[in-house]
Image (cartoon, rainbow, N blue to C red; front, side, top):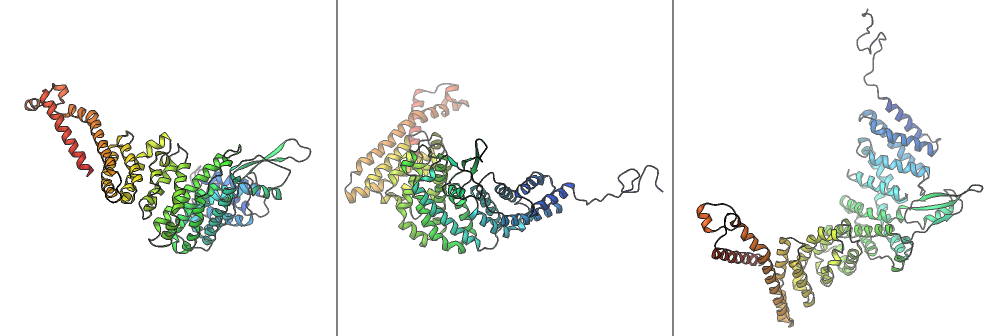
Length: 540
């Protein structure tokens, strides 16, 4: 019927004559289905489920996107939600259940872009909120990222969000208590008798665990040495988790403002108390002082202050936010300055984040509360610290911010504070660490203070004339420096003699022939006059 050695149409070759199914799923899909069924088998131990999930995690990226892939992911998400309810949170890193729950969270975060995961967003949000409330530090950090991703889908409000806001208030309130005691900043070597993962000894140890800690456990009788386990703090006892909470609260406020508004009033009161918390001085001298926990604690305070700035900016004028900041302005400002002084000298990111939040308060209706704190703010070591990199990168922004603040508060400052402002502007005018446009802003700032000094001398008989003469002397010294180091070289480079122009010769005078002495002197004098007129005009 067919030529020898050939098959029918659509055959794979030879004489078999077998028709190929073009829509047969890839073999890897069937293998993943079998692994997913292992996860759904309630008779399997957690270690076997963990191995199956690890194999799924390593193979899922090899599956092409399509109906088969979406079906596998949809089944897997449904099983994940079931497993989160069937298993309990663990705080020992080596525990199989802990590794299984953590890997499930990582898989959900990896697959958040898929339609199958987005279709389960409502159920996932409720599950992630429960994980944030009950899980350990590592899993809570992942759950926060997942919740933040799915909140972008703008789903309807769910009742669990109210429980989450109450949980955040409890976290801040308890952390204020732990910080006052200071024991959370100490690291001690833990040696425990033999126990299992369900022992009460573990529970008592976790109550004093605020960071990832290695625990040495006595081995069973008849064996040598000790076993080492890694304890993970609970999420509500972790300052690292508190560092990520404010950004999620801001996201919830943007989406469900009316539903969470009632919780914000109490929350900002608790956050203000948290900002005022400090590490006890004797604890810093202890040998077991944990610097990493102290840095995470400072980072969480900076993020909390960022939330206060957002709340003050988003709340209408004259509302609850205005009442709070008017009644607690000194506490908030002192906390802000303490955060600046506590920042490590070299890292730029935490100080920059703090400056962004402080900028809002400087330019808001609450700026008058900074009148008494202005001398401390003008101190270089307060806002910038002693770090070389920080000073090089952030000095210009700080100078501009302080110039604006002093300009708006100039008529409310006392004589002593105005003297500090004049000294700061004079110093910035003669420093080489900022550019010319920032120095021009300092000149304008000095000129804008003249009226304030005149009012003080007229109304309070303060010796403002001497300060005014000092300001004029500062300008003279700056002009003298410019004439010596800038105006002369510029004129020598760009001025041409009339004889060269009449001959049509291009180029600097130094290259094509020296100009006449009287012409050079006249050009220099004219350049100084024009420069002085320009700077004087820019200062008005």
